Amino acid sequence: MIVHPASPALRLFEPTDLDQPVVRDVVGWVGDYLLRPHLDLGRAGPVCPYARGSLQRGRLLVNVVEGAPTTAAELAFAIRPFRDWFLQLAPRESTDSAFTTIINAFPQLTDYTIVDETQRALQRLFVHDGLMVGEFHDGPPDKPGLWNPHWRPLRSPVPLLAIRHMVASDLPFLVHSPDLVAVHRGLFAGAP
Image (cartoon, rainbow, N blue to C red; front, side, top):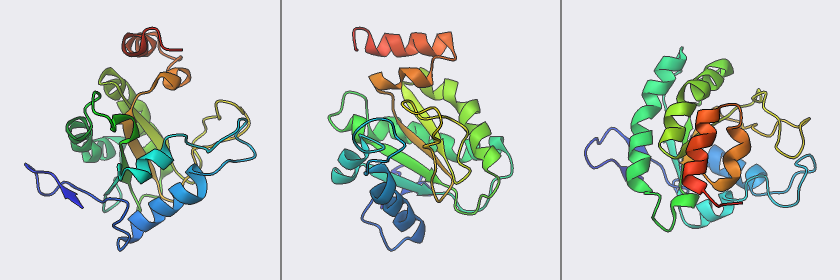
């Protein structure tokens, strides 16, 4: 477990902290789903091409949020400190930055619309910091796969909001907003 040096109430579990049931569930989901190919994916390879490197480097970190936030504002408030901490833990120029992920897990949350609303509300703020915030739950979110528009790949057994650095291949997630595309181009000018 990693404890924030200035705010001891902020804690992140590492992939080896399997005595924590939610961490065990998240790590199991990563291994059983994200690390594997899927027939509906529409391309070769694992569902998430970065997850293996994240696990191998010990850079998959889990924040377990107790209780069930009832609004998107409450959910955003719960994870905002982890966005700031993420920027300290994984500066973009660090070698492991592309593999660092904070998964904010909400095991008691049953209203998945709050997760979706929070992601929409936070996306602009995160992207302007060069970050992505992604929503996952058992709904699953009504967002199609990049290579198969009929598949909904953002399914997870626990409602989650994941924080990670933006990568060049994230452009399709931002095309709905010209200013977010401009941020992406500023970070990845010349990238394919």
